Length: 214
Image (cartoon, rainbow, N blue to C red; front, side, top):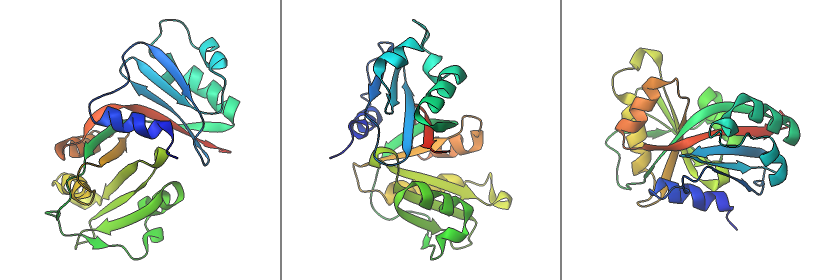
C-alpha cells in the first residue's frame, strides 16, 4: 500500500496543500532508510518513528519556522539515528507525455556519472538520459514515498544557454500525462530554480531528508 505521504504530496502538487493551520503532523516512518520533515505554508509534516508528544515538546508554541530550524532538525536526527541532509525547495508539475523537443539518448553506464550514481543509491526505477553532445544529464526515478522525481546536471561550459530548462521540460514529456513530477533544488541554486520553474514546475514547499545510520 502507498504511504499516506504520497497522497499528500500529490494533493499539494495539484494545488490542494495541507491547511495553513500552524499544525505539525507526525506520519509513520517510510519503508527503507529515509525519514523526512516537510514544510508547506504554515503546516509541517514529520515522517519518522517518533512520538507526536515528543515532537510537540520540542517546538515552541506559535513558531512556524521551528520545525525547519537547526535545533529541531538536530534533535530529530539524534532521536531517529540519522543526520539531517540539506534543505531543499520542492517543486512539481504534471507530466505531459509525448515526444520531448530535446533529443535524448539513454545512458548505458549511469554508475560512471556522479549525478546518476547518487540517484541509483537513493531512488528506484532509475532512468538516465543525455543529449547528443553529452553536455547534460537527466535522471528520472522513484524517490520519497514513491513519488516520481527528476534530477539534472549541465556541464559548466554549457550553462546559461537554456539546456537545463530543456532537460526539465523533457522530463515532463517522459512522464505520463496527469502524473505528478517532483524536483528538489537547494534554495541557493538560483540557476537550477530558474530552469525548473521555466519548464513549468511550481514550488509547493520544502523538505529535509534524513538517511538513517548516516
